[in-house]
Amino acid sequence: MIRIINLLIFLIISTQLYSQSEYIYILGNTQDAGLPHIGCEHIFCEESFNSHEKYYTTSIAVVNSDLKKYILFEATPDITYQLNDLKENIFGAFQLPESIYITHAHIGHYTGLMYFGREALGSKDLLVRVLPKMSNFLQTNGPWSQLVEINNIKIHEINFGSVINELKNISVTPIQVPHRDEYSETAGFIIRGKNKKALFIPDIDKWEKWDKNLVKLVREFDYILIDATFYTSKEINRDISEIPHPLVTETIDLLSGLNQQNRNKVYFIHMNHTNMMLDPNSKLSSLVTSKGFNIARLGQKLYL
Image (cartoon, rainbow, N blue to C red; front, side, top):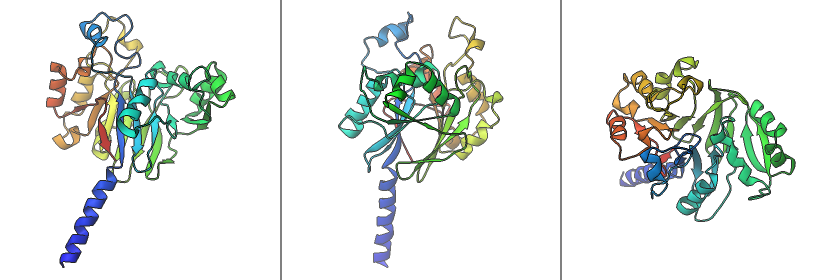
């Protein structure tokens, strides 16, 4: 009997240890133009130039620490720093991802691909997984087309609903998201691990434009990383309808009926430089977390 109990304990501990070998690693949480933001004279922007706190454009890695490999979501303008983050804090040496997934053709999500070109790293056949319109955009517009022509990157075209297996126990499924699709379609990604699953939607126009129910999805998933570009519509002196996003206030209202356990699955990400949720010490950050929600921070790990 004692042997059986000890065996059960061993199996439980082994399972827990194994489950922690695969995780999402937060590489950035800002909107496309980052922080500091060009032309911004807000005190938060001014302080961020000299701050020890680092703010990078929204990106995540999915890591398998047993295999010592990872896949990357978004190729941002901050990719040099983000891959160095992985070197310094995860792998101990520089290494490229097994593949890169890109949500859409806005500047914060794909322009980091330029650093794999001949003027920079000069990579060889780096796998980039994109949807059909994004694939066409990269292959028919310079300078991105040069990356394909000289084999710095290798395009793998994926489709909504397809399941791509990665890193032994990880699968990725792109889903369609309504957004300003000037040059490409826009994807969110379902990321499944052995034990848990996550939904990554850094950009969407409005929840009511989507054919899916966010409340239902929060209940279904273990982690929800969602668009938090603007807290309110009064943050910027521009017509916000030109750059639509669900306001954080709207998202919180939409999810207000969820219990604490479900609210705790939500991680707000992709914050504009005007959104003081970026500052972990701000009153706004405290307000949002007091309601039971999370704010994605650089270096966080979400175990799959």
